Length: 445
Image 1 (tube, rainbow, N blue to C red):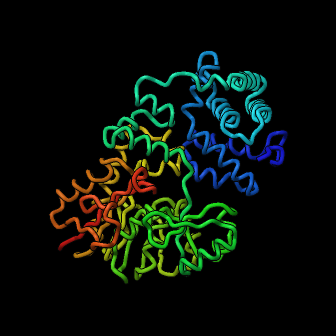
Image 2 (cartoon, helix red, strand yellow):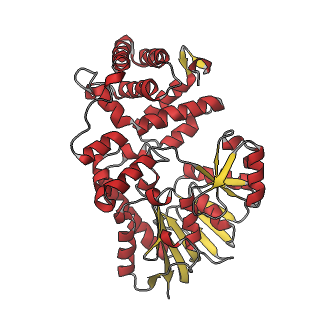
């Protein structure tokens, strides 16, 4: 894109100003997708795509960018204001990774941003560092990689070293590198037809200039690319589809909940699984403790004109419902299976988070079990790849709960390679989707 066409505010393009504010949001603990949706309102569709490419791309390459910058800042990056560091990262990513951005624009715009936000001293530093980076770009790829394999992968793919070490121990170096590669690629968009057959929806998409293809494993899901932003499509506005990665769809297919059942989704936001279950359920009560996150479910419900979804704000640790036929708990987790979709998450996660999440998951699992009718189903799921959040939780629950058994769905419900010991295990590097885990548990009395 020619950056001169992007709207400017006070000499700085609006897209770059928004990108800088999104970095502030991330430092304050806000999630990237929430910040993006909140900040992009004033931008047109082209600027939104450009801003997304910049911020998401910078986060996916942050370790490599930091290494380059640290060698060009006297005393290292740690001595700088965190906001100046983020401005340098954004500038360096434009300079080195966005071929559509002329070097002079990447430098001048970042310098102006630094001047506006931090004064002349910061702008001079930013100018010197980015100009040196531009001059020395031919030398940047000549340094030998770290001798340690884990350090080399952490630098090349911009992931935490401790997490890479865990994954190599579990899957080996080759599979881990494949996972890291996929995490740094743009996540494809998959949609689910709603109130329309797949073939009709595909025809509407193609007529709108959208490329359609099969999405992996999930029946009726359509992978879309090209064309306009999906929210601008007539089929979206008419409520004829919603967006859902195949991994999430597979959790609901694995659940195999009987038609007409009353279902509770106790960790429902943003709502895709609840919508999927509502196709055949008698009713789905969908709760989440976050009123803000529940808004997307409510918006989708209105757009799709869904009538058997009953959302409310509630804490899954203390479900405010009577026992029902089936309960789904897509519990809060570290989200290590969705890093391609959430590149900020890799920089937020800490080793201790696995233990913290595991403790919360244990509470939710045991609370949810109390609101399943005798003979009913409990589906435990996560988008984590970590054993402590998946198999360990289910094994612990089953060892403590003698009136529960693992009951996989009927043969033929899912492709056999997605099942591991009766549990759903979807891995990005093996199945080409987000990561997901689920266990289908039956209350026997």
